[in-house]
Each structure stands twice: as structure tokens, then as C-alpha cells.
Length: 221
Image (cartoon, rainbow, N blue to C red; front, side):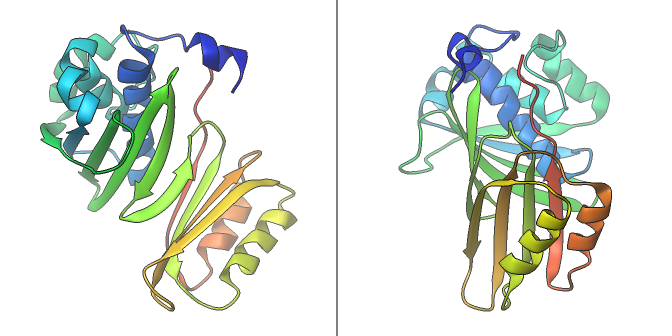
């Protein structure tokens, strides 16, 4: 954690965990959808549900889903901005079990695609994305992050990481989860820098891969 992380981000709103972090959770969900969201269902767990309204958590989540960053002056008018953008949304209180109290579960639809994301705001505007479409992952969104959904097959990790090495990009961490042996799997790779478009196309053309997202990394402000 850097000194800037300890001080907190430049942001609109009263709370780095309930506002800046919530905004980044919404932004991560939008990036994972990969399309302009048209509908959002947002479940708020524990502290987010109990105290979120007073901290602007609801506004911040919608702002992030709209693509705004925590310092965006439009954040307090996020509901009006959503109406202009044609984004329909609803909130509900949920019990997500043994996760951080500042956790949201977001389901987005748009561009004939959908995504379900669970993420926690852990303080200082830092988040951890912990689940994507039911697969366990772990990344904070500040570094470029590659996510792949694929059919589990022999040598998949080697084939993907080999192409990343050819692109001369270093891997910071890699997690891989699967429904079952030979079933659908999710690979989450945090990188030191973004991959080239050529490398992304090469990875996307691996026959077993059905879904790919290259998240650019949040700006540190």
C-alpha cells in the first residue's frame, strides 16, 4: 500500500470506503461487462446496506457503472445522469455471507451481454474484486488485469502465459478456478503493464476461450 493509498484518493463524497471504493466497484463491473450497461441490479451487503445512503454509496456505485471516476464532479447527480443515459437500476439489501461488510454484488446487462460481479471496498478507495460470474478471483483493479473464461483443457495456462511472455509483459499474479475438471474455468492474470492489441487477439483466438476482458487499471489520484 502506497502513501497515497493511506491518505486516500482525490474524490467526491464523504468516505473513501463507502464512496470512492463503491465508485470503483461500479467502474470495474462496467469494464467487465465490456458494453454500455442498460440495466443494473445491485445487492448491498452489511455496512453498505445499513449506512450506504448516508455516505452516498448508492450514488457512487451508479456513477462507477456509468463510467465515472471517484473525483468526477457528476457523481452527486449520478441518478439523473443514469436517467439521461437510459440506465435502469435497482438496489436491494442482501446477505452475501462471510465477506467484507462493504461488499456489493452487481449484475449488469447491456449490448446483449451480462456479467455478475462481487467486490469489496476495503478502505482508502481500495477495492478487491472477489467473484466474477460465480468464479472466485482476486484483483484490485489498479494494475492491468486480464480475465479469461474458457473450457478447461490441458496446457491452457502455459499457452496463455507463453503469449504474454512473447509480448514482454510480466505477470504479477495468476489465479485459476474451474467448475470441474474439463468444465468452464476462469483465469485472472494481474500484469505489470497492458498487453498489446496483437497479444490480446492471439489469446482470444485460442479455441477454448469463450470470453476475454483486458481491464486497463484505475488511475491513482
